[in-house]
Length: 399
Image (tube, one colour):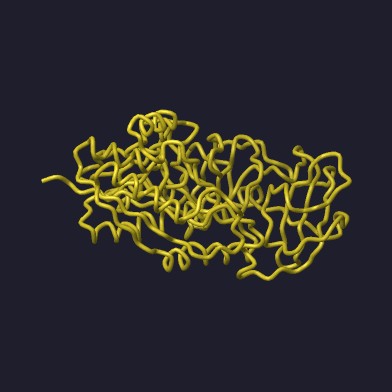
């Protein structure tokens, strides 16, 4: 008897070709379209609206002769993704809704709907791969990067669990985007030349301050410029194993605290919680030779600290810290023990090239010390660590 796969048909080319690949592999395939958002507050005009997505998804299902279903998951999406976003921004942190959407919706709420439709597996159009290995008498699932380096989406799945991976399929992980487009065109799929979606997962491209003002109050505060000759903490260049102590790790990963008297007021903003570390746009301050970048946020004092130029020392940090309760291991069989340290490749944002780093597991959490200083480390974002092309674990950056 054929295994049934329920694929999330989004109305895009990736999930369309993924559905075709599954059919070619001999699965009993059904398409499921999910609508997760109804509010248009802050939404920018675009070529893509959910009604269009639904229409294209239906057209693909009909073309491939597979059953088509739809489900409204807007309630769990608001509760588990959007409300979390609001809470994080209110704290002055920068969440990643795409990572949350995969963990909380696509491989949780959506997977439950798929099981109700008789699905043995859940499939998506992500550019990543899955492998199975044996660890003792247990089956272990490995999450691997997609073959297309330009489209690899393994970072967005860095919070999934072994249980979620067990029933997940990624049919186009071995294909490149041009190959996917070519297949769609050859098959005559309506989605062959559709543009990729942008912005917040299932919400779309938004004007973030307007979107956040649904829950977060706008309040005026000072924009303070910190000169690039300001005395910053020394960046540790490295230290031999065995000579590392928690105080040193803590000092390297500590977010620098600016004092309002350390710089000069150069403008007014509408709320510190609307900004993120490394941000360049949205300050509306002129009179500088080079662009201004956000280098610090204080939501309690409602102050945004900025520095001029891409080489400003306030943009770079040597390390970061992840709390123990916000650390997640996909490979639970090789989870680090307290007191242990390992070398991994790490990325702190989508499409960032992997960076060499050493991870120190301590009682309070994980300290990640990079070989080279990293730009724009933002609390609330996810750091994911890799062994070659496998995602081993991840965590929310605390500082």
